[in-house]
Image 1 (cartoon, chains in turn purple, red):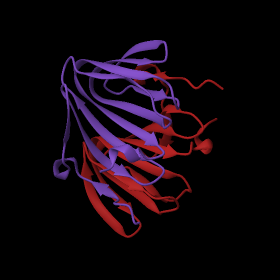
Image 2 (tube, one colour):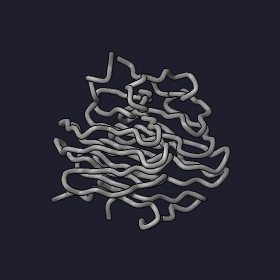
Image 3 (tube, chains in turn orange, red):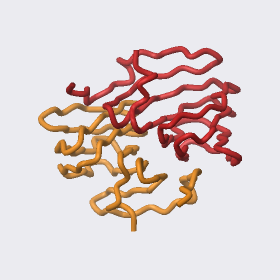
Image 4 (cartoon, each protein chain N blue to C red):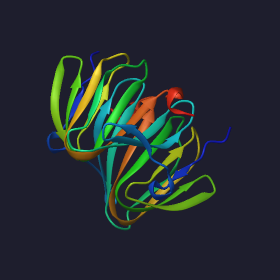
Length: 111
Length: 111
């Protein structure tokens, strides 16, 4: 399969995940996936884990990010790393956007 | 090695790559790496290739992105995927920032 190379946010659908969270799938092949996740103020990404490694960028807003037993408040321009199988969650302090990149691809995100 | 989990942009050093391009290493383990790259208007990321897959997010500005024989103009909020060994380069149309995520880690970026 030839992967798609360019993704325009204005031409990409949003998936409403409920609870003030929505996402756009913004690129993937079998080894990587980039997902844009928008949070309303107060929305949460409940604690969960997955075998994929995750590197995330705070594109907008302020988030409280918990990874394992460590919690930090991050803002636009900051980033975090979630090791494979580490329990992690976020709470949105000021409305914003996370760019979550996974390796390998999150097959569970693809319809 | 326990990887570092949280990265604050204000506490992370910038590496001047010359030609109006600078970067911050904003997280990695062996399987993934997130790098923030700042471009002045008119700066270029010369055409190059690497065996890593790359998923990039346009955090700020406007870029002309060439991957293989395809070229598109992308702006803040858009993204692109560079398959392994695909020749790619960017030209900065309006000063901005790319978030480049690689898998596996770019060992050549680590001092």
